[in-house]
Image (cartoon, chains in turn yellow, orange):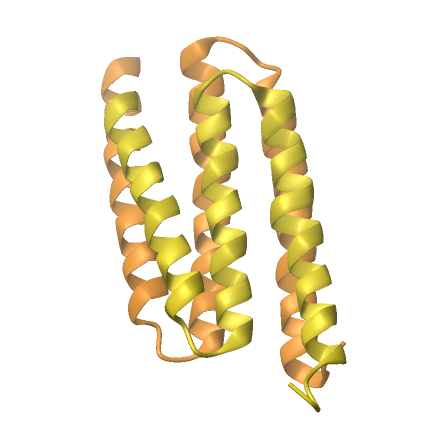
Length: 79
Length: 86
């Protein structure tokens, strides 16, 4: 059962990465990129590395999303 | 009994991840995708708690705790951005 769940999580990483590349709306693309690191953190927990998972969750999913949103707000006028 | 409950939890989490990803893919608006990612974060917390029980290592619950706090902040930041741009 854990194998099935891991396969689904890896498929989720793949799908959200493709969405982050393909989507036209910038905010949706940033959210999809955050979802990729969210699933990656769960896969790290499956691989028995909780400290890596905690760092990935805090930096990849939390901090980088906020920094990307800040950058989008800064560059919205000139694009 | 515990095996039945764990199996049911696995099935429900599996279906919830599938439906969340479907909503993320077909969601026509940004707000739909924000709601989908909030749903998937809560499901991920459930997955981590389930893995902590199965692997019998309760240090994993700290990861779920950090996850819950940060997902709240992330969704709040995106909502504030959509409302008035930080």
